[in-house]
Each structure stands twice: as C-alpha cells, then as structure tokens.
Amino acid sequence: MSNPSFPEGFVPLAGTQRDCEDCGKAERVGFQFEFAYQPIVDVNQKLVFAHEALVRGPNGEGALSVLSQVNDQNRYRFDQACRVKAIKGAKELGIREHISINFLPNAIYKPELCIRTTLEAARVHGFPLDRIIFEVTEGERIEDGPWFAKILREYKRCGFKTAIDDFGAGYAGMKLLADFQPDIVKIDMDLIRGIEGHRPRQAIVRSLVRLCEELAITVVAEGIETPAERDFLRDAGIALMQGYLFAKPAFRAVAEIPDTAFPGG
Image (cartoon, rainbow, N blue to C red; front, side, top):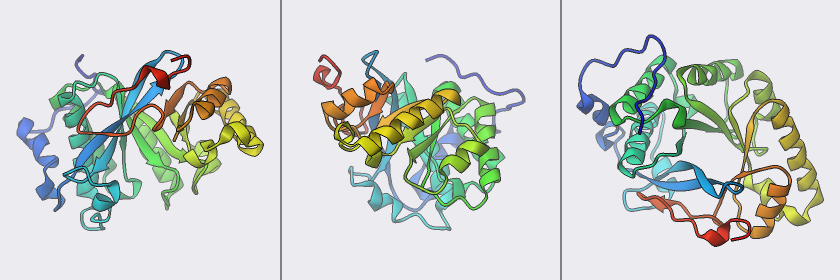
C-alpha cells in the first residue's frame, strides 16, 4: 500500500507503534471483540469497492453480544478501539480497497482527539486516509445536528470519506443532507427488499438517486439478496451494492464473491 497522505499540520503522537496498539486493546473497553468484513461491490466493474468492518464477538458472535456491553462509561473508548482495530485488521488481511468503519456520533466528546487517534492508526499501519470511510447510521439520535455536521466536515478535511448508513430509515434524513453532503449514502435495506415488484419503493429510490446525483453523492444499495433486486437497482443507476447475494460478512477474513453474483455471471 502507498503511504497515507496526512493533512497539513498533522504531527505524529509522541510514542511508538505500541501507543497506537494500546488503543485497540480489550482492556481499554472491558471486553473482547473482533471484526467481520463484508464487501461492497461495483456490479458494473465486477470488482470490490470497499469492505465494511462489522463488529463481532471474539468467537464470531453477533454484533449485539458486543454492543450490549457498550455504555456511557466505555462508549468513547470503544469507539476509539474500533477505529484502530478495524484499520489494523484490514492491513493484516491485505485489504487494498476502501474500508468502511461505523462510528458512534454521541461518543465523540473531543473531535480533534478522536480524529487524531485514527490518523495515528493509519500512519502506523500504512493505510491511505482516502480509503477510510466513516459511516454513521441515520437512525442515531443526534442531539446537535450542526455540531454533527461540523464533525463530518472535519473528517472530510482530514482526507477521510464519509457515509450515511441506513438512509431512509431514521431521524436525520433530508435535514442532515441539507447541513452536510457526505461522500456516500447507503439506502436502507427495507427500501430495497422486493423492490423489483414494489412501485412506491421504486419511485422513492429513483428520486434518491436523482437527488444524490445533483449533490454529487455516491449511492450504495445495501441488503441485496436476489438477482431481481440487483438488476432493478442497476437499471436505476446504482452500481455499488452490498448484501448476502454477493457475500456474507467474513469473520476476520476477506469474503469470496462468486462470479454468479454479478450480472451475467
């Protein structure tokens, strides 16, 4: 991988690689966790665009087994540990595409510090900043919208990409797009399910695609399970997709995608 390009004024934190590794240790949050990686594919190019890092228990248990242990006391440390561990894991797996990391907006007490920790992790592991995507779920209750938009703008200034996950399912929606335009919008799977035979969902998704085109935002459709869903979305102008049709999350591994998952495969 190429060396990451850091924003002007960034100075590595005092210490060594061990300082960065310490941030990802389970002792900092009080419990163990790992990651599974699920690909986001470009169906037109028939290649992988990114891998989303999805939290799992130490033996592959579901995300709830981990997230149920997150509380007000360890939320910030958990968020920081996730960043470091996801970047480290991607480097160890030889991932050269983007990695997408979910973050907890209500855990960011000191934006400049949380971003700095991520910058340091990228430096230590040699992962390019422009291949790191930070996702936030639209359903998160964000108490201060303008403050949150400022956080995302700072992420972009540092060279990261930003994404709104589960778009169309939560509270932020169009108001968030008015305050801030992310690089990526991921359409919620509830709008995708059976879309080839559901005219209202078709109209909504087509409208979202047109809106995002006007705002220069890339659209990802998630939760794709059937070739019919894939084909409709491709015809609607969406090339980037994620879902079980292509691959389930691979625990501490890079998922293999069968040729049959792509159009014409």
